[in-house]
Amino acid sequence: MKFFSDNAAPTHPKVMQAMMDADRVDTAYDGDALSQKLDDAFSEVFETNVSALWVPTGTAANCLALAALCPAHKGIICHEMAHIEQDEAGAPGFYTGGAKLMLLSGKGAKIDADTVRGHLDGIRDDVHQVQAAAISITNATEYGLTYTPGEIASLSAICKERGLGLHMDGARFANAVASGGHSPADLTWKAGVDVLSFGFVKNGGMSSEALVFFDRDLAAETHYRRKRAGHLLSKGRYMAAQLLAMLEDGLWLRNARAANAGAQLIAEVAGDRLVYPVQGNEVFLRMTADEAGTLRAQGFDFYDWAPADDGHGQVRLVTSWNQDASAVAPLASAIGAL
Image (cartoon, rainbow, N blue to C red; front, side, top):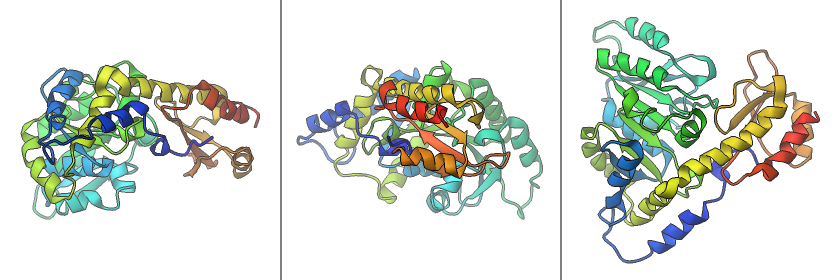
């Protein structure tokens, strides 16, 4: 009955088992046998050689990635609703040593090439204005929309023209892959992404996220930054075990497909309540306070959200990997009965 966040979902049993299996003596930090397998495991998923690091949180993943792309005196272009702006308590500035977030607008928390180019053209090339060093996009976005390979490539083209890095916040990257029919490679390095924060905790993991560097040179200094930031855990094998368990036999993708399917069940009954198309596992609905109260009185838990563009109230519903059709059907039925 809880649809407020996939962060609250239980850990997948295979992940728990993998951590138990890792409960043996091994080398400390990231020198253990499991951590040493990450590069090869993620390289197989992305069909190219990558460097992969575990980190405990999505915030750490995002901000270590941005620190690799942006020096303290420059800026990072992102959407005004991006997680790095709205929900990370200034961590990007902390990790980069003071880099500025350069905020743009766009429907559904997506930024497009024309908007980015216009913003860059408006920055004077002198010491009195912050110069951009990177672009950060979220896939799927904070409103559940996905970027296509073509949209990402158009942003990457600007990066190549202007000497910028391209970061992807993939807290729900699995849901984006499961939604669009594009491969992980198509949505990242083939479209020009330099580094991906690959989310697992929302998708059945326990406490481990992945930093995937397609520009492998960027990974070298990140090892030092991870330690300096306090995120080099002494028993890193438990972190690696989680990631490897999720990658094995495509568990990460099956979990995402299950969550997406639950969201589609809700979308089918929502009709014109839908604020955005449902392309992942997040559903945003127009709803009055009384209607939301009616659902909560039936035991459903979810977040109120910012008002929709037309002034109506709005709620956010998030489905998780463990909520099958039988778990989501009561909510869909209750929404249909409003």
